[in-house]
Length: 174
Image 1 (cartoon, helix red, strand yellow):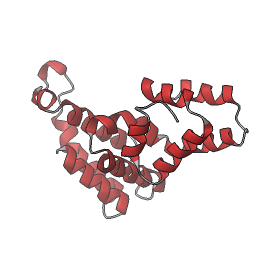
Image 2: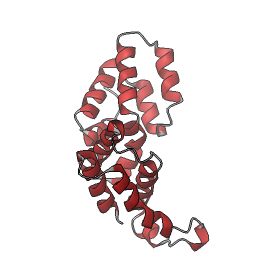
Image 3: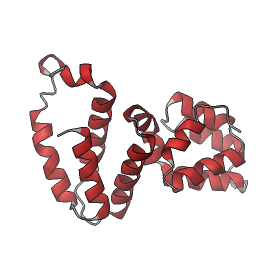
């Protein structure tokens, strides 16, 4: 299975044309073929396309570990966001970097909205960011972003504009 094939399966799952059980079943041959021993693993995929390989395995394990519930709407939404992220960024490296935020998108944007309404203090918001598991450059951007920039970020995420979100976080927050 390639990254493109995995993304196609995630798209089908998000759209409801593939069940959770069928998604899991498609992972079984790939997982069974992986020796889990670094010395016995084939290095060619990592040598030829490290970003694609890293994203492939991260997504495979993310959705493999999420269970097999066919009616899990949240899991399907996540699959849809992942597909949109890949299509929007057009970069496996950028998608990999954004993935923790994409996974946490709904909770993160709820926290941003509460912070904007001053329900969550600046200190509380910074603590959430510090404990988030986001990549360091994303944390740094979020720590320095004003509420308006955070709201724009959440708007971009909600519209599936992940490429624009990634590009914005590469610059000083407005």
